[in-house]
Image (tube, rainbow, N blue to C red; front, top):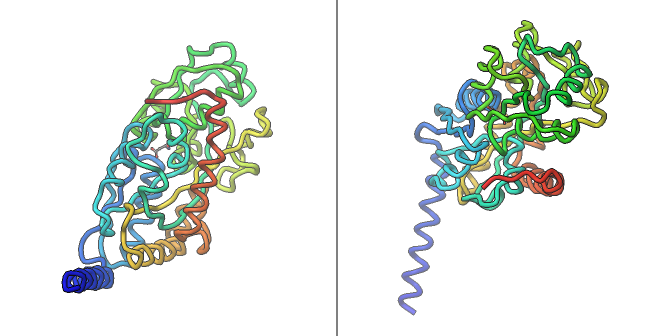
Length: 324
Ligand code: ASP
């Protein structure tokens, strides 16, 4: 009896302690892990929301880039981090494709994380180095079909959005290209600009300014309708790849076990950031928009992630792509 009493008292003290900490949160700098290199599109989205969320939380949020293996190295780091609200994770659609692409993952994409909310859904663009010998999508399709693996395709590793888009492109064209993996499409863009690699498919958050300044070629956007910030760029569907559609949704997570009051506090800060006029304007300039309030919530991200895992599993299986 006595032992039981002592145990429950200890539990009560622990719960009270956790609640008190959650109420004080945050008392120090928060780290937001991006599973790709600095200067790329996921990094851009993270830095924009981190700054505004930091304002709301009255604590700085620093972005740490942990790139490699298509985002899975960063995800593994977060899955092992302390669930105290001081490690956050901004990832994209790759969180839903990795479980089908990797035979072994050192984490569970759903169970190792606490969802905070969806952030944005970013269109992609198929782009090429400026002197690639194809002026439009039809010429690009013909060129790739004729030259196959002589054409090089940059991506951010198996599990990245650029990998997924490339996989869909190669399936649609019925041919392989030679894949060149990077730790993120920030460095990949540098090589595309330098002419060291031929093609890439990447978020408008990374390609818009290069397209506008005509430093790279663009063949189309991956959305159903044209993107307002790139009005002259056709949809790939209209440009010769019927039904070619993919959007890169982004979500914010914390390690599993992060206390609910902390998650709720972070979701409120995310909703604040997504209504911030500067964030909205930057997103619009880069071809995207923040999700509405009802999507920037844990339940919305949890539901979306599970649905996307189920959606991509058969497509990836059919493509026969996997990594160890
Ligand atoms: N856009 C990249 C991807 O293909 C990642 C990045 O560098 O943000 O997933």
